[in-house]
Image 1 (tube, rainbow, N blue to C red):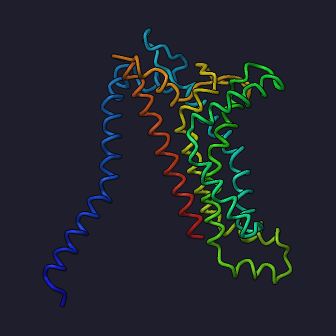
Image 2: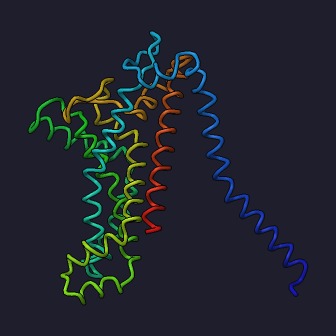
Length: 288
């Protein structure tokens, strides 16, 4: 039998840790409630259809359409995944399957350092190098969907690489040995056995990278061009939902301010829906 004081102390510590665990849910609820309280009134006043599917954003004149920004956010996210997903997975495969111990000790910390670089630095480098490169070799102003996708594709690399690497390393060694014993080459074992076994973790890395791309603001503002229209091509400028909030919230008031919070409601809803479907896919893959 343990002393009564030890039992009481353990219970107190358990209650404190439980409170810490649920505090994150409390913060999430408070943020969600605040955005809803500030943004929902405009949906009732203007109409959900006029906001979500409206093509014109001019709050001072009563137009609150954010459909071009919704489309732009999806296009930017897709472009970032197209660029950063395969590149990140390739780096993770190299680190997990081909790199030696010395190479890992150099590359792994370098990738972690890449994750700590502020987003404004990525945007600054994009303005200095990527935008002029696109302007010279492809035409246009350079501030475009292509430039934004490249910058965000680079920014999500640490997330994709790190989580994919952990997923690949968690595959039992017996899987590799069994494939090699059947006569497979190193690449065949990796492509046919290891990667499929780690697909749930790889998918999770892409989802988290997508969340980074959707929520990114500063770098997008610097290289996107901030045009209030649906981009017709890779070289067209655009404005995302996050950029719209960051650019105008400082001086907005009245219905304009509520319109920006309505943009936040839509953005939060999109992220929640994507995460829900992503979690369903991950659970299905893990159950197979």
